[in-house]
Length: 487
Image 1 (tube, rainbow, N blue to C red):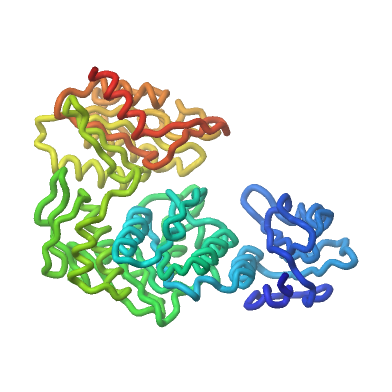
Image 2: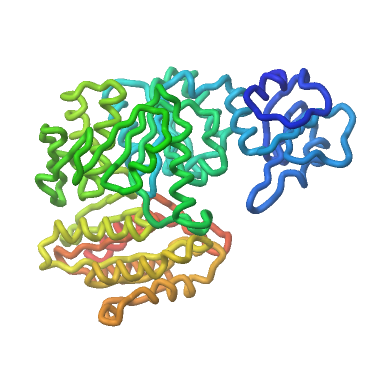
């Protein structure tokens, strides 16, 4: 049990009705999880308003309510705390409740449109190989040293973040690498956390269904760097014009990385092939198992961050050379029939272009590139024609299909993608709504030495259609189909 006044430390409070000396059992923002002795935080979300569930929380035993507007009917024996922003208040309360766990390890936040999962996961891999106890908070999974937990969001809610950071403290974890999404920043889920390093990868078209404009999306990312303390490092990609924007108001020490521009950390691609990349990083050559220009940026960010965190250069390079690709990020295999199948999470125009350009730079052009791609439902609709344009312009054959249609009609999503196809490229495209059938068709089209790219879902092991999730793993399915067809 903890006193409410201690949990409210650093929370901006407008008014209090009742005593803050009350003992609190737990903090909750979901009224269904409230038990006797809890404090309930009423958050106004995009789908529901927590203020509507205050009475239910009290009936379940809540002894305190934190809200943005006090109810008209105040119950006896319940403490009410009025705040301007309940999401922000929850973040500080979560941190206080779990004894500010981010202060007891070195927390590294990775933000940007593409590359967050790869950079965070490979930093986890690298420091694990270096012999440290490490943690990971990513889209794919949560790791507390060797213990794995399922991830549900790119950036979890602030209670979940602090719960796992506390578990990391208990396990003696020294470094934690965390994906920081624009949603997470905007909803104050990372407020109250102490970051040692902030990394910016790049910024391109995404999440404009949530943010009103690209400028707002950029400024939300920037606010993460604005909040870094002066003893932290800010590491940004300055080949992206938004890199320097991230540094404008940060109090943190500033470091840059780039492939094309003068920067603190520079890399040059010496060889780029399906077997890997040969890079020169700050005048040191290193062979890596990862592929493509976009991974050259990711590896450079990883090397730079590791050095800033104290790893010696020669050891750093040795460990970089051992890193292996992340699940669903340019994950590939070659079938018995010599067909290369690649599964990648590319779900933005920029990411899809990067992957296709990488494949085209490696292949000899004597083989066909067949792309299977869709767009998610209930998400940014403006990127659909762009995805259709890029896929059809950079592939020999394209199969438009379903991704996670969610509550939308799959055919309408595919039609929006088709609108981006230029007339001369129409003959390259075909639409197959059923994703498994689309992958099967690509396998049937492919001949020896051809390349199949399955884009959009990557590491996801499900498909969501009209609110129902069913098992669906692109990597397993394409393996099964190619094996069956090549018997």
